[in-house]
Length: 181
Image (tube, rainbow, N blue to C red; front, side, top):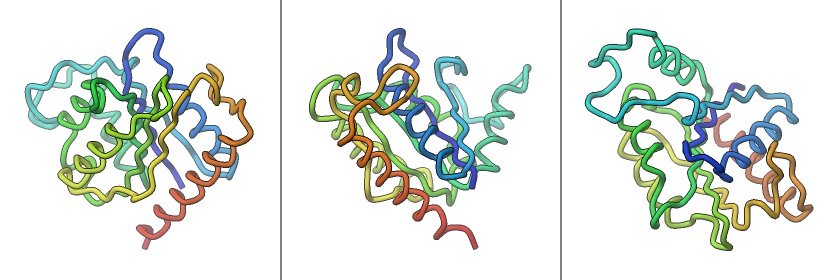
């Protein structure tokens, strides 16, 4: 299967991107394809209109839309900012909604430097996924104290967390399989 992971932080010094890399590593370790859509590299303009209704002179938006279209599922990853998902991820969802997500199984992952792991952002994101006509997986990956469990290249450095990310990935891939007919 092909899974796209949307890394929802574009902030310098971000820590949540470690989770995107860790999920990508884990998906690849079980013989599936992971593609990371990195909002820091994408540099989306602020939302003014949905993709398809705006100019896309360099084809950047069309390429991202195609990546999502051929993906069997998506994982949205966000840090928690002020109790909510990142504005960059919300902008991404607004730009590409709804056609790019319609009917897709979407996993939720969040990260924080503190112990709660971004749980408030995770709940908000699950509600948003329903509004874009997609299917949120009920289980979420919330990663607290992210720098203690993953290094900068996404390698797991905590044995307890290793079990957590493996279980989440297995559950997510099983969820996506249910949508493949």
